[in-house]
View 1 (cartoon, helix red, strand yellow):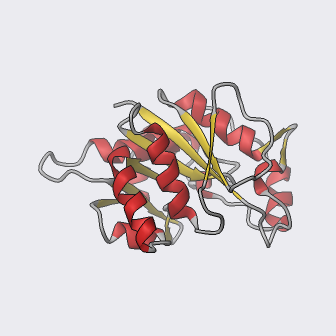
View 2 (spheres, one colour; view 1 turned 180 degrees about the vertical axis):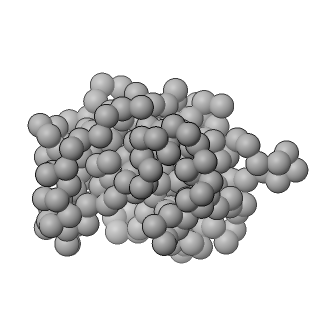
Amino acid sequence: MVAAGIVLAGGRSSRMGESKAALDWHGSTLLHHIASLLAGTLDGPIVVVGAPGQDLPALPPGVELHSDPVEGQGPVQGIAVGLAAVADRAGAAFVCSVDMPFLHPAFVRRVLAGLQDPPADQPVDVALPFARGYRQPLAAAYRTTLAGPIGEWVAEGIRRPGQVFERCRVRTLDEAWLLNDPELARVDPNLESLTNVNDPQDYEQALLRRRPTGG
């Protein structure tokens, strides 16, 4: 199954005071880092979805840029835009936010596997990690066939991922299932892939840590 990558760049963060996408990450930017990681991991197109008119830093070669049609509508609109952009080229997409500096290729591959191995009579639309005490809709895998339905739901006023999950078939991936993959358990046993940079303190602490290696 060809899998695409979708990065939601977001706009200016009130807690960070600036766009997370442009934050420095060891001589690059968070956006460039995440997009490059997905490009090196997946066999399908990589797209970045930004706010209308958002000034974004340089993207890796071949990465596509798309924009939300309306500003301030939340992540569901970005998911719809991204899925629509790749629906004719990939059967699934890993969707993530831009502020995940420790995202690991093994985590991406494991989450996508959640779409592929359920029983044949129980197909799913979304493989949704539940880890660190929370559902992780912006570190999840989505069937690209959801592009049309999610777009329609956005037009109806749906803004929260939880509202989307009420309308489609979701497989929850708990920590035990995620870490049952030997590779992920070896390279990311604490699921640091799900670490977010939400404020300046988070960002400074992340910069002090070792940059993860590819897998």
